[in-house]
Length: 143
Image (tube, rainbow, N blue to C red; front, side, top):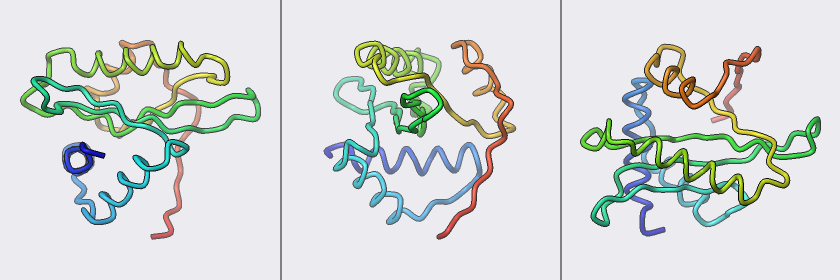
């Protein structure tokens, strides 16, 4: 909970950088807080340097009846611009992967989505062994 404001600001920056989208800060902060208070929704991991948060990743869950297990969705990945190209993204990913190995039973894989024109992210995920799927993502918002 002590990282609530930082995570909120990182998520707002991520939306601006990747989608040129301004998020409602009150709704965003309430959403981050709800997740931090309810581990059933998911969990954040943060990277720190000198006790300052410099990066984050969010893991949420999707039950797959076809596989009788959960996919871990990797979301809200953000590294502060002053700390990019220093391996922080890789450290966050490696940490999540290690957690998955510890909890291997019931975890059937990782999933993520990436903005179509974010070619740097496409390459980064491909370098980690992620493969483009045959699925297209659709959504219908109620807000």
